[in-house]
Amino acid sequence: METLKVRRRVVFVDDHTAFVELLQFAFGGLDDLECVGTASSLVEAEAVVADRTPDIAMVDLMLGDDDGLELVSRLRAEHEDLVIVVSSARSDASTMASVAAAGGNGFAPKRGAFPELLSILRSARPGTMSIASSLETTPTLPITERLPVRLTDREAEVLAHIARGTSVAVIAGILNVTLSTCRTYVRGVHSKLGVRTQLEAVLKARAIGLLGPADQQ
Image 1 (cartoon, helix red, strand yellow):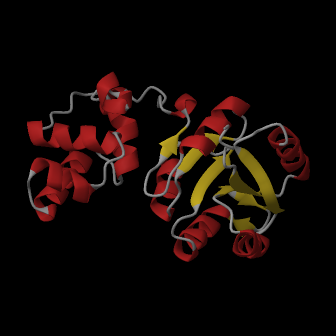
Image 2 (cartoon, helix red, strand yellow):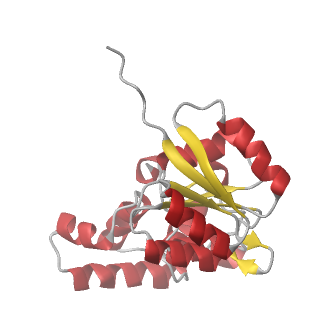
């Protein structure tokens, strides 16, 4: 007997009507994702998510007079299990880091390829941050930022775990150290890379070659 695939329910939050209509049309041919609602403002989005209880909210950062990043923060606070994916024309490392800090679980460029967006919508899960492959290579850094960064063995190990999406608490357990000690390693990584967040650390480490292929899975 054939098992029916459960569709994950998606709400689109975007004030570009033509873009949303195009997405709705494209989703009509998918067997694993379905659009169950749309919104074009912060207030509409909160109401639609509360009413339709989607699995995923896809949010643009530019919502007319509203701030999409604020919406990400609100949705995260109100819906612990909701997957929040941002698709935006703003895709610099700072923006992605802000999305991650606000509680986002995925990021894809708005002008990127449709299959790439689908990949993020399908892979994103609560508690992690999935980034479209086209955004994982940070533009070439200035010479002053490409000088050798020397991490200790422990710091390098912590960085590799962070790049795989492992939480600091879990890393502490893996390394058999206290959470406080693990956080010290994380701070050391941030300091040596000149960044403030884990996402920025991963992006910069990739850009300067500190992470190999095995560390980026």
